[in-house]
Amino acid sequence: MGLNAALASVLAILAFAALMVGPYAIGPLQTVAALIGLGDPQADIVVNRIRLPRVAGACLVGAALAAAGASYQALFRNPLVSPDILGVSAGAGLGAVAGIFLALPVALIQLSAFAGGLVAVAVVMAVAAAVRGGDRVLTLVLTGVVIGALAGAATSLLKVLADPYDQLPAITFWLLGSLASVTSDDILPALPAVALGLVPLVLLRWRINVLSMGDEEARALGIEAARVRLLVIAAATLVTASVTAVAGVVGWVGLVIPHIARMLVGPAFARLLPASALIGAGYLLVVDTAARTLAAIEVPLGILTAVIGAPVFVWLLASGRRGWT
Image (cartoon, rainbow, N blue to C red; front, side, top):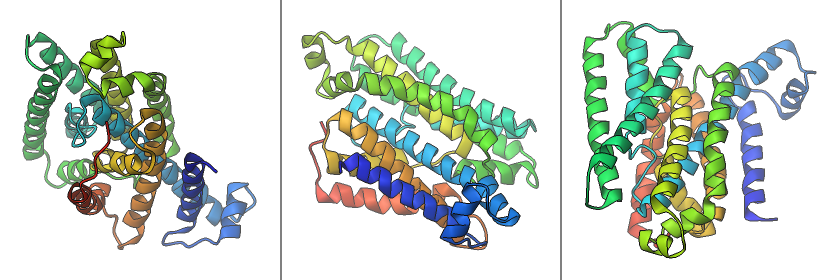
C-alpha cells in the first residue's frame, strides 16, 4: 500500500470515528445504519444533518489550507510562508466582519469573506506589479504584509464600532474560526471553487518544482516564472479564500502540515501536494472533534490549532529539518 493510500485509509477511519463522538454518543452499527438510512430518527438527524456536514467541512478546510500552504512554501522557497502571507486571511476577515457589521444574511457574509480575500490579494499583486526593480518575491511578501496590516486595522475599527452585545461576539467568534454551524449548504458552494483552485496546482506540479529552485533555473528550462507564479498564487488564494469563507480564520494548518508532509514524502511537489492535503484533512478533523468534545462549550478552532501548531512548529525548527527545495 502506498503512503497516500495509507493516509486516505487513516482519514476514513478518523472520519467514521468523528461521526460517533459527541455529547450524544452513537455506536458503530448505529452510525452505519444512519448513513444508509436505516437508523432511528434521532441518530439519523445527529449523524447526517449535524456531524456529517461538519466532518466533511473539517476535511475540506484542512485539505485546502494544507495544499495552499505547500504551494506557497514551494513557490516562495520559504518554509515560514503560510496561506495568509499575501493578506488573503486578513482580507477575508475584513469582508466577513463588514458583512456582520451590516447585518447581512449568512450566505452574503460568506460571500463577503470570499470576495474580501480575493480583493486583498488582487491589490497586493497590483501594487507589487507597479513596483519596478528589486526582488519580485520579496516585493510580493512585503506588500502582502502591508495590505494585511491595513485590513487588520480596518477590522479592528469595525469591531470598535460594532454593537458590543450582538455583533461583536459574532465577529470575535468568526475571526477565531469555527465549524459549529456549518451545513451542507455552506460546503457545497465552496467545493467548485476549491476544485478550481486545486486543478492548476496539480497540472503545474513539475513547474512548481522547478520554481522552487529559483527563477534562473526555471528560465533555463524554458518556464516563464512570472506567469507560473501568478497562476499558482491565484489558485492557492482561491482555495484559501473559499474555505476561509466557510470556517473563518483558521491558522497554523497551512504552515505546519506541509512540513510534516515534507518529512514523510520529501520535497517533490507531485508527492507533497496530495500528502499535505490528506494530512491536513485528518489533522483538522481531529482538532474539530476535540473542539466540540473537550468542554461543555465550543472551543474555537483557531485557539486549538495555535496551541497545537506553535509547539510543533518550534520542534520542527529546533530539529533542524532541511531539504524542502
